[in-house]
Length: 167
Image (cartoon, rainbow, N blue to C red; front, side, top):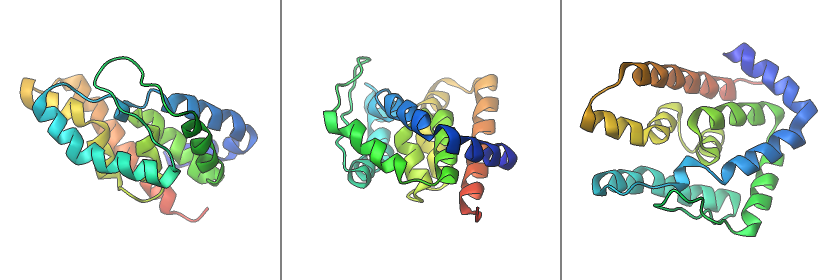
């Protein structure tokens, strides 16, 4: 995984603008913006996602808007620009880790928290898979989903190690 991240970091340098634009577009459908309807699930989201969303809004100087519907919430016009500025300040290594983490977690906001050290890999995984883990508790574990989650958990640990290395 670290070799993959090293290679990605080198390639990012050539396509930084495109990668950043892709991440800004991806932020509109960040999974942390879509909250559940179930009271127990909402309590967990409030406890785990709430502070992270607040941190991201503060750190990036944005106001990402969440929803409980399936419709993509309309975001403030400046949020995309400010996220772009935030991403442009990242090194190629950080941007590579950010990109891979965002895809694994379906969340630009969680990737920001991981890359900036606000959360560790374990916390990032638990936040990214909060709803799946809640469903598994309530309705049982699905073997394929559990296997995929274990792979992502390990990838996030590798990303965290990569970020701590001197590049």
